[in-house]
Length: 470
Image (cartoon, rainbow, N blue to C red; front, side, top):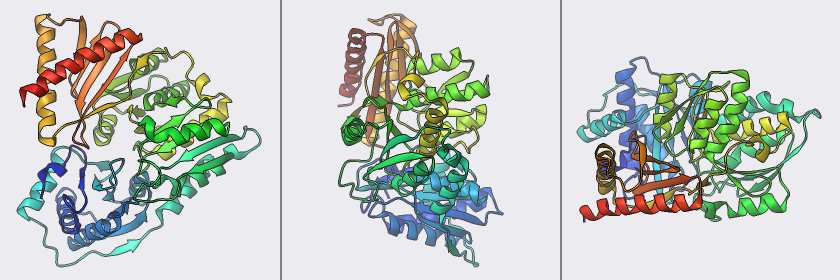
């Protein structure tokens, strides 16, 4: 068993190499064992799966393991990840597992794990690893049993009841392009958005674990070219892209411009603050500085936090936050919803705001300064080296701050997740990915020249740390 598959907030690796049916069975045993330890009265969980070629067999094996510990399972089958989370609330379950490789390449797969209504992370993920390694599984003579539950229908019914009022003639009809990237979002989203009084144009909405049209990651420009082209060609009001398991969203405006996840947070936050002034919001370390400033300007309190869906949800709970957003398109809405990352629900809320205000996306973002920025820049790095390299970089910038010897004035650093360095006219971020063997960088500045200067400076500093370990 490769210990590196146990990540910060999920379990993920290459199917057939790092993860197979035997591992999935043992994970089911470990999950049931852990769940009974923290909740002796636990009786029911759900297991869902995405459309990857290995997901069905892995889900079946996980279910066998869980049942072996005396816990009953609702098999909710092929569905988006947010619907597996939804099932826990809808059916009042004790936890669950989603089998998904998310936005990773087709050969990957993994497991997102909930205990109670919270996805677990950090040491709790490591405890599952310990249970598997030591084979300290619960020995329950009375086995659990499995039932099927149609979660897709339940979710669609829930959302139609919530949003179908928008189909009345009181609201203008919107034209919406949906690119599900052959992931699972296409199973439910088009039907719900049509019920909201929208004309829907579908791209790649049939699940296909080979992802034949493009990789399912709407945060990478190369993978949303078809969405951009179709949105412009069809004169649509909005283009919406989902990742492979539909917990991340990408949005295109009517002119073909990308609306990043942190900008979506601005639109949602402005709407919420009209009704709930003083609310608490959370943005991850990759979010634009303009997001934090706009929320504060409109009367909200905003907190910068680590990237990662489980980490953000936990922080939301601690701070009683009403909304959180990540630049990568994970949006968490606790305003009249459950607070987990649901790209489908986010798209419904954005469409609702557009319909109720009569404004397009550009106008909904009026007043946001036009800053220069990079997308996420991903540098491949060996899994066992990436954290060492970034930790060394963090130390270098701490020393720059304490000694005052930085070649550029540094106003402050945030080291909650890698290092975000705030300069006079912008900032740069270097952190490790929690889901891939990758170091992630992102930069933003008031002008293009400053952006390039800060980017080059931090890339040079990173290269020094890389060379140190060679």
